[in-house]
Image (cartoon, rainbow, N blue to C red; front, side, top):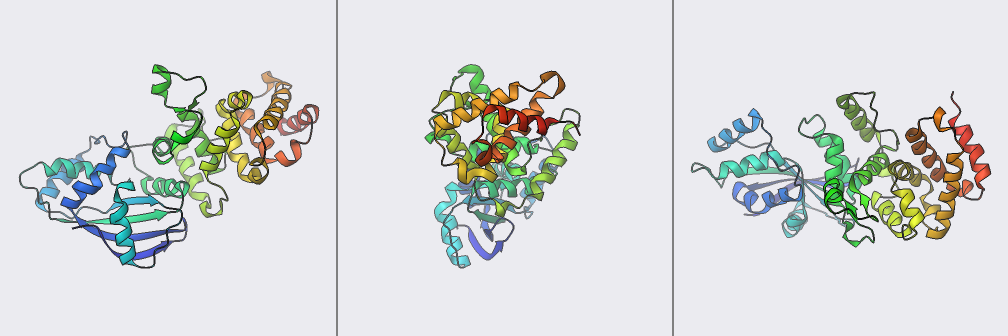
Length: 342
């Protein structure tokens, strides 16, 4: 038995297809549970009484809450449930478990018990989105309120798993990789993730040591939910590949490796991408040199350096078509106007 889709609809928020489907435990263990391995940090079973109880209920024949699986396909066009069913079964190994990893872990554990009934039915929600940003948006909304993982952790995991960094000229390293085998030219996964959060929220200030983590997470989720994800003309992938391309110039690479610069760039790029995508690496390096000259003219004792670097890099990139025509002196005046305390 495969996974059968019996209902199909459109999610207008993320402009994606959504199907309701059914399989059984045997199929789920064979085809769905291996997808857990795509998310190394998520697959660890939480120490929670709920899952102990769920295991017992599975063995008694309960109907497990639906699992949500997602696919990314930019050109998919499905007209009916039959086409959806064929697509899912042909591409199941390419899916991601958006919601239900802990339940699948519990199912795996229960399946080792003698009284386990492998033919029991199980239901699925299936999402096919045309890009990764919409998929992550939906994952955040699905997991809102979950205590197992913070939104930042979810985004960092998805940044690593959803994006194929293998084709990039410059490596993306995790903190663990950087500590054991650091590559000078590599970018930090944590910094890429921060840029992704800034891109999704259109906000450069998503961390604040003065606000407790739980409250900041609520604010972050609110910002993501408030975005009109369908209005984005570009994907985060476009930013990553552009930064990789122009980082062939070492000055650009060093500039982007400073997290606050990259965060500001990710937000500003959304407005000026049509202009910036046509710029070559050497010209961009000259512009970043002007930025640094103007930034260093600021009185660092009078400003929060990290805060203003994020804000000014966003302002600089957002208004690139105008500001890139000016010299460092003009830019210094504009930066001064931006940093005047209200």
